[in-house]
Amino acid sequence: MSPKHNPSQLSIFPEISGGLSAPSIATIPEFDKALGNLIKMSDLGAFIQINIHGIDKIYSLNLNELNIPVDFLYNNVPPAPITVHIFPRDTQKALKKLTYGVKTFFNRGNSFNTSFGYFLFRSHFPFWKTYLLEQQETLNQYLTDSLSKGIFGQYFLDHFQQGYDYIKNAAADTAPWTFREKLLLKDIQECRNNLIESQATLSALKATDLDFPFQVLTLKTAHIPMVLHQYQSQIHIHSVFKTIHLEYLSDIDVNTIEDVRKLTEKL
Image 1: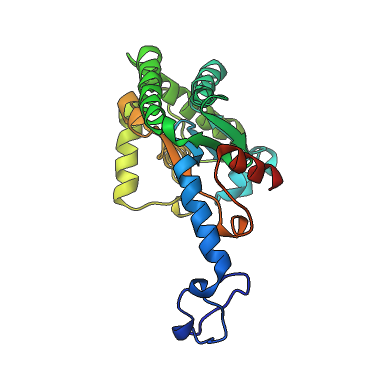
Image 2: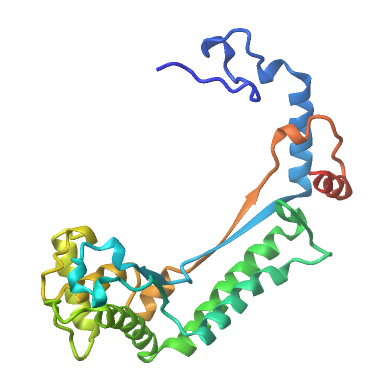
């Protein structure tokens, strides 16, 4: 294996990198100044990146990606692909509003917005941590209040049904498939277990199988919980404290919040 060199980066260990002429960060004055500015900036605050995982639950369905003989399809043509959300539009909007609420914490008194994200003043770090926990609890409470008592499970069945009907409407009379009159969560779970046990994939499913459409939808929705508490356990609000690359800090002086603000305005 031969080492790779990037001329825009400085070597930490030039004596073993195979290029003794490569400059070392330990011998360049700019590095000392940049590192000093980084430490002072960290004392002032940090850039916040916010990530909210697990809320959006969707699947897409494209019959062109499945091994279906064209004569199994109406007019020998697959319909346009679809994307299906588990929640109706009103619920989607309510969840988006709750996630946007996370950013209402930031104001002129505790931060300022930049292209790197919000620069949060260090004095407000503990408040931010507490606020995140409160937002997570608020989100969980909304889900419990609005989606418990079987509502979430029904939403799952509804969005499963949309894909099932999509295949049913695309099927020609020559297709050997049978379609179930009623979809039940227990049947989907049983099919999930069987497909997982057999390590089945979409490409491995046989289009000649009578239950092929049901199997397709079971695999397509396998990443989506069928019960509320499992869905809630997948939702997480993360905030990551980020910093700025040293190359931006080598030729400036950082002593105040205003210095950080001016720096971000130049970038």
